[in-house]
Image (cartoon, rainbow, N blue to C red):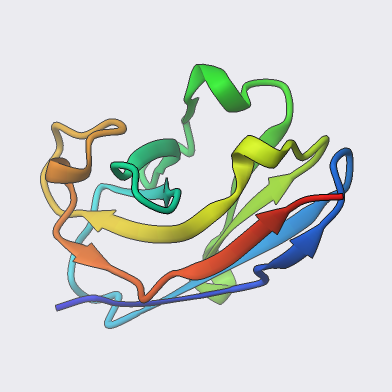
Length: 124
């Protein structure tokens, strides 16, 4: 089982920025991708972004394109989510997750191992 630990959540005003980190351990277990998901209170979990661990290709939900950037530091076994131009609708608990099968994208069911989540609140 992979272990993933998120950090970097907090409060930001609309238009502000936050940078989330996801540290992955037990990395001898192969995983194809790391995804970021978020869940607003009372709503379903939705995919935000993912990065392929083979070629570093990236994918984004339409709602965050142009504002969020996912990246990976292989040496630190860490995946980042840089969130700029934050909006109130970005509020939620953000999770990182690992996909251990090759057919993945932004569906939560495609990921096997999950972090504990980090809270992001965007409000004036």
